[in-house]
Amino acid sequence: MTAPVAPGPADLVISGCTALVHDAAEHVGFAEDAAIVVRDSVIAEVTTAAAARDLAAAERLDARGQAALPGLINCHTHAPMVALRGIAEDVPVEEWFNDHVWPIEANLQARDVELGARLACAELIRGGVTTFADHYFAMDTVADVVAETGLRALLGQAYFSSQGPAGRAASLDFALRRAGDADGRVTTCLAPHAPYTVDDADLAATAELAREHGLLVHLHAAESRAQTEHSVARHGVTPIEVLRRAGLLDVDVLIAHGTGILESDAAALRAATGRVAVASAPRGYLKFAWGPTPVRLLADLGIPVGLATDGAASNNSLDVWESMALTALVQKSATGDPRWLTSRQALHHATLQSARAVGLGERIGSLAPGRRADIVLVDLTGPHTQPVHDLAATLVHSARSGDVRTTIVDGRVLMRDRELLTVDVPAVTRELARRLPALVARGHGGRIQEYDA
Image (tube, rainbow, N blue to C red; front, top):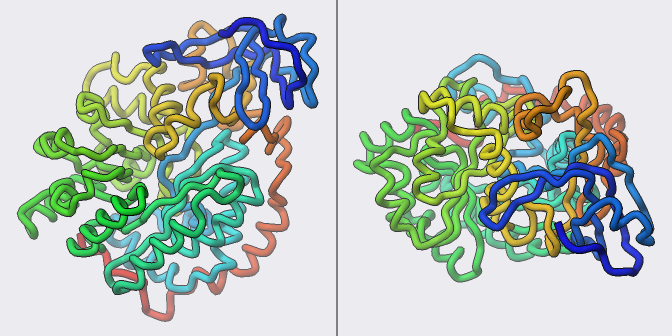
């Protein structure tokens, strides 16, 4: 908490909330009866409601009975794939890719991507997600949707080596053209799909481009233990070793999933000179019968693990609250230790660790002066969140995405009292429904890629 605020009008004052704050050691705590003052899209002060009571403001929000959190971050998703939610259920991953998703994606048009992205942004806003990292196709379209809906995003144009040099060139072109769009809310990255679809030469070239242009690389790697075993059998090294040889551990890299990361990978990860992070989406791993991301091993290595959902075609939702709860529960089960992860640790993963994972650790992820004003207000008055003995536990294990009342990005209210202000969901779903028959057709017998990992 800061000293009483200086005089002068604010753009927004949120008062009466219980604010999630971090101390100097980044431990999660809570400030009661707090006020958050926003000026010029950033948090100017976190103070007491009494200190801010008479402060002039263009807008005020009474947040009594609510918790204020940094906006949640979805560190790995394929937002437009909400159009394929439920299309391939109860199948192994190779069948999911080869018989369902990749044949359908051969039909994708830019308009399908746009509609899917709009629907995804609505879901994210309603779930208190203010930033998402997207790895998909037709990303100019997604960048436009991000600009219109008011969200923040790290975007990468995905590519495979089967596309030839043009795929990598298009990923770089997108990253350079769209960086800083939407008043700085769009950041960009290079997005090779995975070591099993992008060859060693392309991975090495990507590392060089990342180094030359100062870009983060976002890719899938070591997604499952079986995938790691196949890599060792075919190439003699794990997927993490493939990344090391290509130079991708010496640039900033966001690794999606990592459930196949082994203890033997620790030496390569420890020696990395780039900023390495992992995005974990536990619901999908449970569906595919994969193991969990080794969060404890990564924590010991100092590698941030951000929370994610993956695409809704595999996860069925973009609910980061669910990812937070599952991360805490699955890690307890995997380690056999009920003390790991605690609710406060889970909140740390959902906030500052996720911000670092997407390369925005100095801009978002905490409610503190100078941070961008990405804030969500969570209703604590429902029967399922009362009584509150331990607010961290209530937020992680009792609260749900539907408890988010208000979502704010850069000080702009995108949802107020559950009313979406930047997306017309009925119009999106009507048009998407008309386009779905052509999109989901698989009779053409083609696919954009072959899964053989």
